[in-house]
Length: 274
Image (tube, rainbow, N blue to C red; front, top):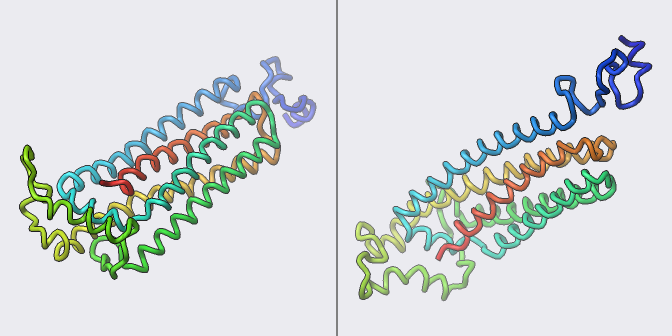
C-alpha cells in the first residue's frame, strides 16, 4: 500500500493505480466525486442552519409574547439603547456579508490572494462588531441597565434626548384615549404612575433580560463565526482551495449570512421601537 501511494500522481489516491477512477486528495474516501462531497456538505450545513433558525425563533417568540403583554415597557426601555451604535453594527455586518460572498466567489475562481483579502476584511468587520457591542454592554453595566433582578438604573439620560424621551414615555399616559380608539395606550392594569416609576425597574429588568439574551447569544455566534473564518483563512493561506474544491468556504459563508440576518431582525425589534 505504501509503494502504491508513493507512486500515485499528486492529487490522486492510490485507488487509481488499482483500476479505480482517479480520486483527488481533497475528496474524502467515502465520496465518489467532489460534486457528491459538496452536495452532501451543503445539505448538512442547511440542516444545521435550520436548527439555528429554530433556536432563535424561540427567542423571538419570547420577545413577541412579552412585547404583546407589555408594549409600554418596550417604548420606555428602548430609549436606553443607542440606535446609532446599533445602526453602525448593522452596516458593519451587511458589509461583512458582501466580503464573505466575494470570498466564496474568489475561491471558486482560484483567486487565492483575493480570497485571503476578503476573509481578512470579514474578520475585521466581525471584531469591529464585537468592539461596538462591548461599548454598549459597558454602558449598560455602568448605568445599572441589567437583566431582571440586577436592574438598578442610575439615571442615565435617554439616547434620544431628554425632550424626545419624555415625550415618548409620556405619550401613552398624557394623550389619553382618542376618538375611535377602543383600547387605551397604557393597559388599565398598570396605572400611569406605576408605568413611569414604581413598576419600571421590575418590568424594564425583564426587557433587558431579553435584550442581553438575544444580543449575547448572537454575539456568541459571531465569535463562532470568527473561529470558522479563521479556519478557512488558514487553509486558504495553505492553498487548499481550487475551482473544484471550495466547499468549506461556501459552508462558512452560509453560516455567516445567517448570523447577519439574525442581527438585521434584532436591530429594528430592539432599537427602533416607537
